[in-house]
Image: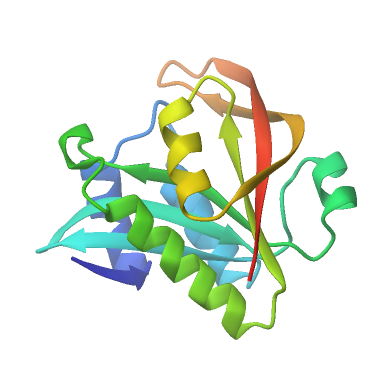
Length: 164
């Protein structure tokens, strides 16, 4: 497995192998933030197939209460491994370690991530990697489905932080 920054030519493979429920590519939006310098979009590859990804948002979590509590703390966002049969095989851990390495290289003192309250498996992984629960928040986001209908989502999350 190798991990690299997303390139424009990777987007089609990401959309093909790691689809999102919305009509618009969230991979494209992550790549655009990377191009603007606001994020680094990491992709895990097994052979020539993407098997996981995450985004390091250098501006931190979008939730204002999290930014206020942890100013200057980048956020690992949207960590995912596909297909599900590859979970618990080190892909997510490798992505997190690369995100931490990048943050350390930028002089960051800590890094954080949000985990849904109903995802104990992910929470246990993050705890094993040294992340500690900091504060609850609502992760609010939206997407448009294939029929053009907008959906708003509010996930109850806990922000976890790890000193670097």
